Image (tube, rainbow, N blue to C red; front, side):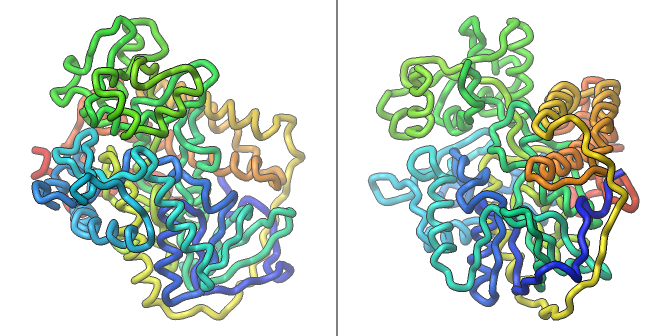
Length: 544
């Protein structure tokens, strides 16, 4: 149903560019990996918009790493495994918690300025499901922006890194089980073949699958979709994390109200003004995100409301303004004052735990193809990402990817591929209209709560769009829709397959977690379809 390539091309007729390492995407994963790779390689970094447009830029809460004497890697390990609901790869989590502090130090060396206390120690906060204060942040609630600022500055002044902004990577080029490069569309619509000894996917997640999302417009699952078409293994696509607290106010976008707000003591209240988290979890507002999101949804339904409130008015105005300047300023644009008002919030799609399956060095099942950041499935996040682990994951595995790439031998052969299909005439429906219909189907049938009949209905609606793959695709909107459609299929099929509730995946027809039959991953690839994979290293001892 989904073709190997989404456009027609003949490599013999395309211009060719050769480099050492091709990094597709920006964000902390793409920027950091490019910088590390440039120490021994020529790097071509390709972004479909710019270095500054990614999920990282909008990350508010911070980056999780052990920096306190009261904390330890073992505590961080246990918190991550518990949040991951039994599906974390414990070896991958060990890598994260032990190598994370080193990675943060490298960010600091590269110019990232994290907030400090008056005594010179780094200011640490706590977020949901963390047992310790281990979240470093910058400019209060603008951590992602500060990291992107520092890393982008290094990339732009690095003579070993060439950046192609506003370029769209169409598909990966593979031969004999190896990734050789990619076909890229330039801003003027022309195409070029790019070759290198390694390709790194740092293209982010699939947030735009949903109508209500905290993700920017660029989060259309491009890397996951092109990896799937190339034959990479795609893992755990059913696990979509919905952030419990996005701004829900007429005329305002679904702006993220950071989990750190609850970490600093904010309450959740229903529209009657009642705190309610004591009915759902002993950790109250600091329960895992999936629990909080479903609790909010339940309260909204019980009170017949489209939102609940987050309330931090009991904290001093000075603390709120200092700790959350970005959120405070944004809310003021809509007449909402974080220091005096209860802020209306509702869940929105936020983060994908699944993605392209990788090993401990970021490697995929296709040689010379790597994935880093939200596009990857390293095994760190399991069924539910622990808050602020994603930025740590990107730098830890980005460094490991580069160490693996440095051991590769160069590739000096071009490929000779010609792909052509019988194309139908374009349909009358424009890409933006198609995207909205797809998003509505995903919200309704593959959202926070799922069941078999709904998922089957959702798949039927998704499949109605499949003929688009047989039409000529040229514009960015059309290409993004094709990638979103691919990811929607993978997500819905995985969700229908997993007949239990675990982490961010909740089935109303199978409301209990099942560790007998379902302590395993879902795996999909083009050649073999949907399959399963038992955990390589069980984390039961941490959750039992």
